[in-house]
Amino acid sequence: DEVDAPMFGTILHGAMQRLYAPLVGALHPGEALRALARSGEAERAVVAAVNEHYLRDAAATPADYTGNLLLVKSIVTRYIRDGILPYDAARDGFTVRGVERRVECLFPFDPSDPSRRVLFAGTADRIDALDDGTLRVVDYKTGAPHLEFDGVESLFTGTGKQRLSNILQTLLYAMMLHRSRGCDVEPALYYVRNMNRPGYSPQLDDKQTGVKGARYTLYRERFEELLRAQLAELYDTSVPFRQCEDADTCKYCDFNVICKR
Image 1 (cartoon, rainbow, N blue to C red):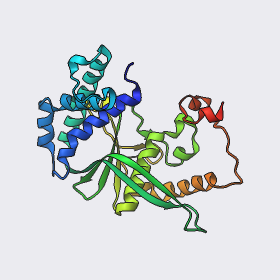
Image 2: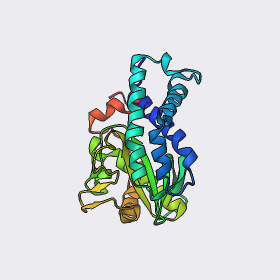
Image 3: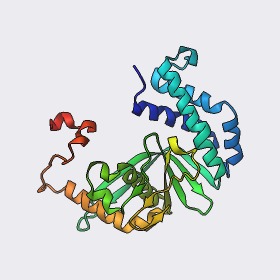
Image 4: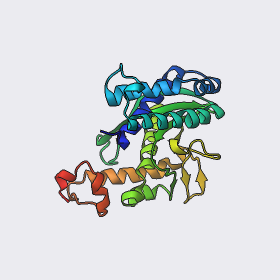
């Protein structure tokens, strides 16, 4: 068996949790991050994550790894040591507040009946407090970068890949944090394969407004209006369930066995 894309992401997330958990509460962790990058801690964290999540054998060593697993270890280590750690160290105006932290909020979607609510919940890869008091929700991504979108409407009205679920996801996390903690939130998508490139930015790039790096409150009113409309349709018993128009989506859908497209 070889490491597939979801397991690759799981290994990276596990390693990052091990590296950043000791930094929770540390103000301006730049020097600590540079020290981690210089040491062998990144590789040790990756080995521990491989052993825990893939091999399920805490006593395993790289000498036990197959060629594919050695390659995965090397790539993930490089993404962390040469990408994430130097990037954060060079921009250390933040304090890590949590890693793999559960966030949630109740979201009312029916103005005529406040009791009709949906519980949004998830696990944020990392939550930082920026020096200006804003929170930042960080989501690590191992795929190809997608930071551009054409306004919040496109996240709800597009189909398939046009909907950019990664951007919708990070805005939902920002909404949960904003509603539960009462402060503004900056979404950040860390596409790890590109983080060592000059000029890389994890901030969302809204081509409709021309704003890059906007915080949640810029989108809050329209985003939540569209979210309510989407939920109202989902819970409207007069609207039948229907298959999506983009058949390519079905290749990765968890429900394609039920749908039988």
